Length: 161
Image (cartoon, rainbow, N blue to C red; front, side):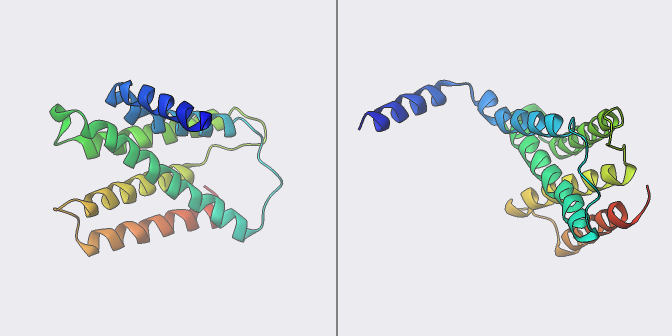
């Protein structure tokens, strides 16, 4: 039972942390992990299948980042109308900064097509959040975002951008 008592103390402390900080923690963790992983040289050239999955991970990662940023902005009522735009712009800005950072790491490249995948993933993530809301997007917008994500990943995998 000492473990349960310790967990209760940690949870009690966690709930005393300001809400904005608790909401921003996932964003901070993601950005820190991605920045540290982009400092490592790229491994040997993968197969096209592995490259497609790797590039697809950009969509998932930046969808998660945009959704997490959206949660942070949801706590601020003054940003109600523009929180989706702000979330998308910040996710895209981080994608650009990360690609520029990679251009200075030996064995890594700065890829415009990765930025496109990041932007499309952020858009898809925000549509997923809106879908959960009462005024969610139409199926056409969601399908369009999915096609754009797939096209960006294909471009990053098979293109030479």
